[in-house]
Image 1: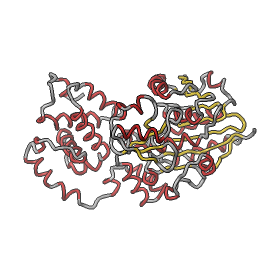
Image 2: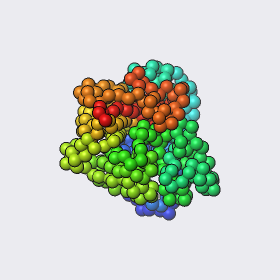
Image 3: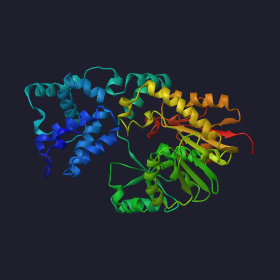
Image 4: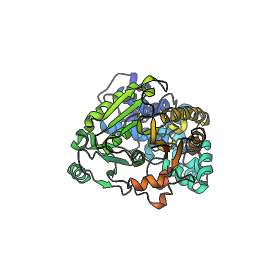
Length: 439
């Protein structure tokens, strides 16, 4: 925790200490000992005296640093940690377009540095350094989509994600939700790709409004909504969300099933499922059964063998498609992490596939941009499980009335879905649709 959090609590943080407090927070974040949102949450809990404006200042400035870290470190031109964190704090405040505290020029060295920033910023540098993408990720993007597209993708990943909503159609229509949000001063625009998807600019206080409180909407990225729609869930079916996590896709599936049939939400984390339950209650769904499993050999999984009409495997992955929301990920993981994840992904996909009945559907998805976590892994699975065959994602998209614009270039050579952030304006997602032989 920042040193300031251990001092006597004052009514409001003194303006003169803002940059020092921000620099301490940045120092904590750059240890990368935990996900950034958890570190930030603990920081605010240790500063209960802070109001909404203070929290906004620190959060936006700190997130700006994480999004732009390697570029800001280049601009900071400092080796000593205290001066580096101080200059990163200044750059974060400037990037977030927050008022720069008067103590920014604490000595002549920092003043001269700040006055020289425009010259450094205008210099020619590696574009991936400017976009703050680690070299190994840049190389992977170039190999996948070429240098020009890779740069566009890196730029998109450095931006702040928009706020997407999914309308819970078992409770309200899109028009009703739009009108309800409008009365709260929030303008939500429909997204043409998918019925029931809305987008909001800015960060309004959704949780205070009736639409959120009564479960008429869920916050869910457009890409995530499309992945759930690829399951093609139908009324009365038996469906398994094998890695339910926070439950966003589970809720979308339950709504698509029109609150009928049976939907199992499996996860190895009882804590995650506990956090999911209030969302489930708010949604009004009664066809969802959250189940905390002990692992892939849990007897409850074995009892579901060959019973599911469809199984969604939203596998744990590098998460590189979500860097707009989780910019610290690119600094917390490396190629060795991806190699470990591949073994886990393959084991999970094989275990989940055993639940699919003859003629049933298996959807493997990640929020990764790396082929080794996506199509390469699916190819290995299919070579070892000949009872499954690939279904072109375009066929499923058409049946589900998902209108993917052609300029998204969203289908890879194998016919799987690949949503790139710079093309789709969503998080990055991959999905392969498969079917088990039989009827």
